[in-house]
Length: 182
Image (tube, rainbow, N blue to C red; front, side):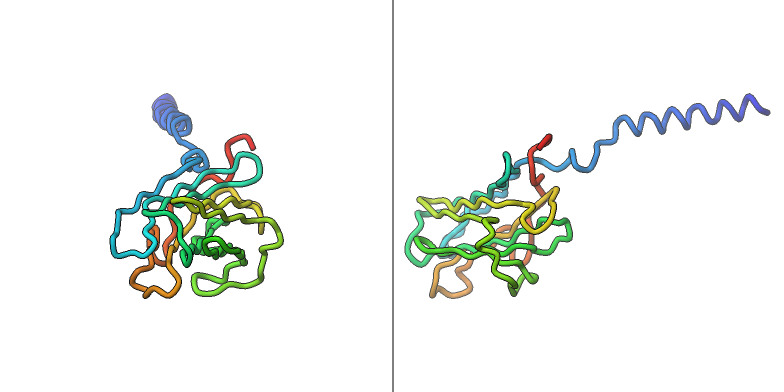
């Protein structure tokens, strides 16, 4: 009876070793760049065509929003960042074309808390057909992955013309906060 018991254990041990060798760590499955495409929508005042999330090369990660037309007076963007894997926004950025922007510690989707603009966590540039946001994923706390939600709008236009990517109160899939080895 002893030799059979030994033979039964060998295949199980071999199977466990094979699974361990082929299992990919969760962090390796998260990309360093992600592009979220959005269909052209003629009824949106400041249409978003794509949002690209890119891991930090050094200290700042980047989110690039490509719009359907050049930026004009009255255009604006709001961006919510989830930096701690709880699928709720941690940082809220709001900005208008050719104007200033502000960053806040987020309180969910509908409100914001303390102004963190002076911390240097976030920078917004709106030029040509792009809004480029550079931000420190670890501004509030250490961050391994991040995701975003983008809202583009034109001041004074009805709510029906606002464009959300990937959707209202929804976040993109995650991207690593930093390049591997950083």
